[in-house]
Image (cartoon, rainbow, N blue to C red):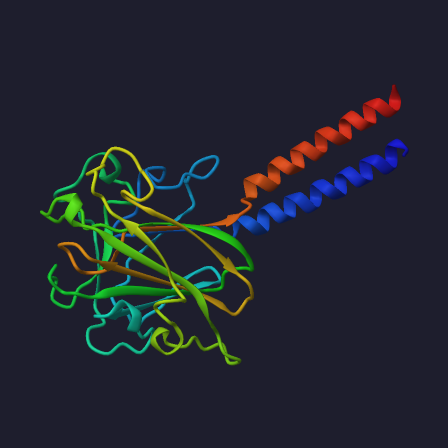
Length: 280
């Protein structure tokens, strides 16, 4: 292979790699559910290569009947007393959400000012921790691919001990949009015993110093198989504060854009080595 041909092939490989990296980056979704913007973006369950600065979007929805939009991605909300019977977009009963800065009790370490684990989004029909309700979201617009999701949810203004604030996250991709792009209600399509995977944020070790999976956040994996797939997420506490709550959500496509970049660099070095060998 002559030098010109080798450089052409190398340039093509690097170009494809760069394009894949750009397209993958658009599918990383970092949401801070709070009344204020995060000023310490790396104080989070997942830190991207190079840091989280510029990756976070702060959402402060106050009604479950209004969608949120982040680029091409749409987030719909739902509230109901039973986690496995949430109707998205057709709320019966309370549709009030409350984004709060929180941090009145737990406000150091991972819950320090500016971090994404401090504030949160709660159901707020009467702002009572005894309200036994679930808070759900349905997300559309994710590209086809493999993903990891990192979720945190705790009321950092609760006077209860951390070990009493157990939160359950449920995830499903079994819902799809119909031919008109309409997302069906979860209770008409989802089987709670087979369609959901569950992650538990337990907090039993009262860990506020560092992010540890299972203690103060949940990590789950899922696959988007088609453009019509819908990601359904539900938060339901079984602890003292029985309202569903989301502090932060990080959705990361696998492999990440940084992985494609490393592959491109590696291929570039291989090409250079081959070129040097051919000249020797």
